[in-house]
Image 1 (cartoon, rainbow, N blue to C red):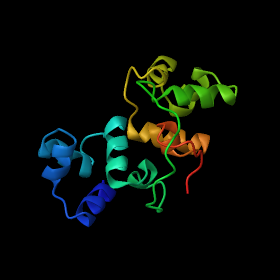
Image 2: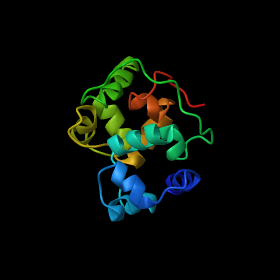
Image 3: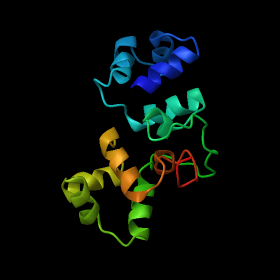
Image 4: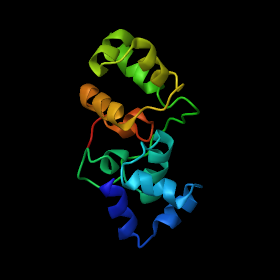
Length: 147
């Protein structure tokens, strides 16, 4: 991800510094920057907090580097429950969202239950479909829309 590299360089850090912060190898982190490996949502959240920016900014969904106001909700192993909340508020079924994402209902249900980490491409599709920020979906903020 070019934004990850930009943020890291702006802070005069090396990949090994960020890798150490994330408790992983430099090579593993490098694969996030070069988009070889999908970044797990918990790593995206940690990076956004570390750089005091938004996941939306890291993913290129906004050009505003400013972080959103922090959420008042504490999420413990339920990051994707907000997906269920938004879906139900729109009176949609898992099948409806799975069809939009071109996947099975069972596959989609794993995102809502945190059984599988949500891939970045799917996260971006959900953000665009629901017109909310990725930070909102990941409980980093209570602000629904991007800035």
